[in-house]
Length: 135
Image (cartoon, rainbow, N blue to C red; front, side, top):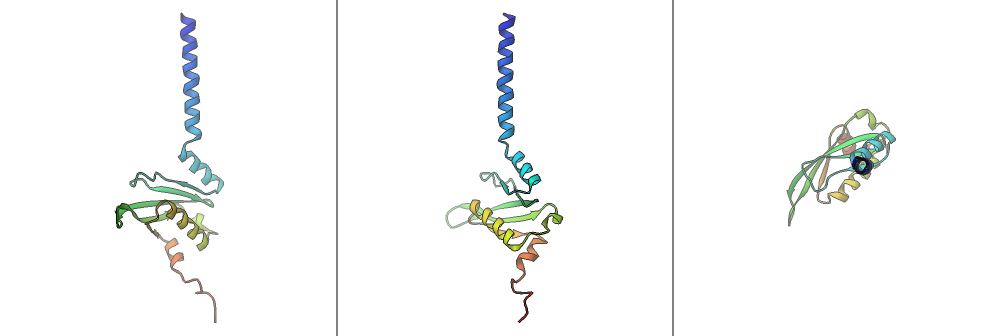
């Protein structure tokens, strides 16, 4: 009887360890951390929960976005998003095209949203493209 109980306990332990391993490997927060370390793109968001901020890892920088609910013609949707970077030093080398790419990725999830960048990104996005050219 004790041997049968021991076998059952071992089987339950193996199943539990397997379950925890799968949960760890599929955890989106872990994937975000890994993408951030490797300088890759990853969009971490809970689209169904407007109260939770989203995170974007892109070229070694970590961005956070805060969503605000509002009304559209027919429903309540996310209508405003404020995005900022956690470490401004990581912005070195990023261009306007990179931020346009990030805006497009955000708009795929929130098509009715107006995206607002916080400084210093806001300054870059407001500059005119032909400002530095001479006539």
